[in-house]
Each structure stands twice: as structure tokens, then as C-alpha cells.
Image 1: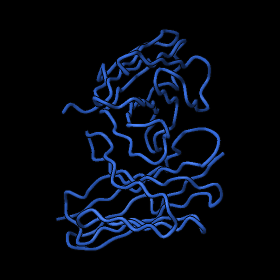
Image 2: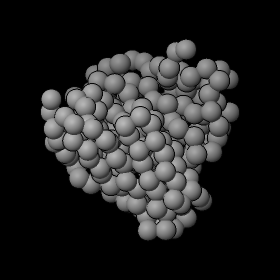
Image 3: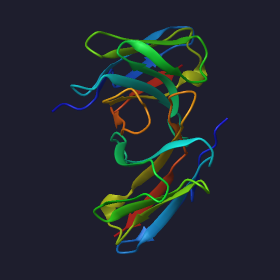
Image 4: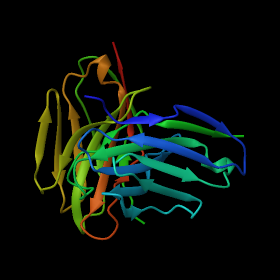
Length: 115
Length: 113
């Protein structure tokens, strides 16, 4: 069975541009979460979606948005990119909506570099 | 702001050594505590999800314990092998409010053959 897949693997953008990152969850998983990970820190929660509805949002500015599609895949959009948005963006899926008592299954991430 | 602390930040051990590291988290409104292993160039892999005070989980040579009243969890690796080299992350969730995991910064383990 395919795991969580993310695309693209790497991306280079310049300040002010926007970016769309994509994630396909494990088949049967209805919950998708997005995390930002910078070097030396643990992943920081951005969004959780379940059944196409936003179930949680982290402390990120409104430049960050996401959505989930009927097939449970998800997109993370970031507008007006800043140098500080350079990071590894991880997507994780899980079976249910609780977000807490089920393990998260992570993709390999998208490495975003802002020049 | 939730604070999840992991110690030590990094650890170098010899093959065959047993080792342990700590995850500290807020002791109130506990819901769940997760452990993940993150090898270089791979994605984080779930090790354990623990929800009850006194929980003990085991997976091969790796085990974990949970004390929700004092707000800590230990991860133990018995007889470390080079393939255990990875960053070990813990993540905590409250039983109320935002449905989000708060991760610690991880313990980076290097096992020398």
C-alpha cells in the first residue's frame, strides 16, 4: 500500500511569490495534518483537516491556507512568501478525526527554499 | 503556549549500550503522548501512542513509559544498534481546545558500531 505522498519534493521560490504543496493520504485515511519543520526544531502544527473541514489551526499567519478535497487529498497554500517560510513541510494522515490517540503517518515532506 | 521538552538534545552511544531519553510535558489536561523515530532522509515513523497514566509500550528493543501525573515519558532502547541512529520525537496533545500535536525538538541518537 502506498504511504503518504507529497509533491513536489523540493521547491525554490523568491520572496513575495506564492506556493502550493500537495499531499495524498494513505488510502482510507480521512484526516490530513500539515506541519512546518525548521532545522533544530520539532514539527510545528499548521492545519488539520477531516472530511474536508478544518479541524484545527496553528499559530500561523493568514498567508497560510489549506483545503481538503473529496478524495481526502490536501493542498497547503502559502502567499507572499517570506525568507522565514523556508522549511520542510510535512503532511501526515490518520484514520480518524481525534488527532490525538491515533498515530500520524508522515510523508517525506516538501523542502521549500525562499531566495 | 504548550512546552514539550526533550532531553538530552543529542546522545552518542556505543553499539550494545542501552539508553534512555526523556520527554516532559504539561501534566494538566493530558490526552495523548506520541513517540516518533525520524531517520535521516526518511519520514517520521510512529513508535507509540500512549493515553493512560502508567502505560508501558514495547516494540522490539524499544519501550516507553508514561507518567501523566508528573508529566513525563521515558523512551528506552535496549542493546542499541547502528540502525537505531535517528532523531526521536515526542508529541503531546491536550484533551481540550486545539486538535493539534505539539512536538518537542527531539533527541538525536548516534550509535557507533
